[in-house]
Length: 132
Image 1 (cartoon, rainbow, N blue to C red):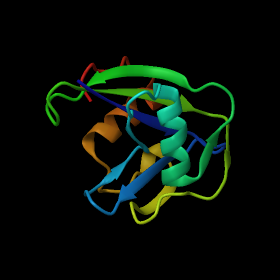
Image 2 (cartoon, rainbow, N blue to C red; image 1 turned 90 degrees about the vertical axis):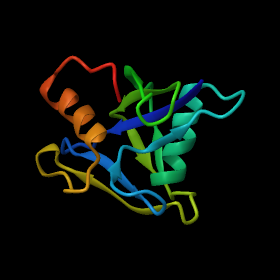
Image 3 (cartoon, helix red, strand yellow; image 1 turned 30 degrees about the horizontal axis):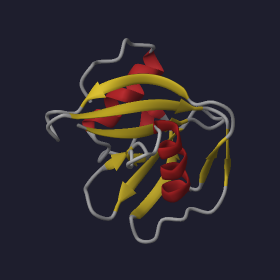
């Protein structure tokens, strides 16, 4: 089994952070894989600093556990909402093409379907699907 984490990072204007990788198409919520001997929240903290220079302040809120079997057999994704954070310099070298905050009503056209579903669930207060 593999496990990933993603962060729904919200700014004061109600916009959410999306990233675009250099190695795969589309805009995504920031995050990545949980490494050996690393707990999920530590993975989330590491990925957010690497990809976007986001430092979590306070406790991230677990929004759901999602099956990602359609993309990777036996994979799961934990989604956390982060409303309290500060900015630092991103540490990733060459992995991220762009990062930015976007209004849920005007996401980039290349935003992935899974990312759109998670943002809609948050924005509209919908019950999350079990599938990523």
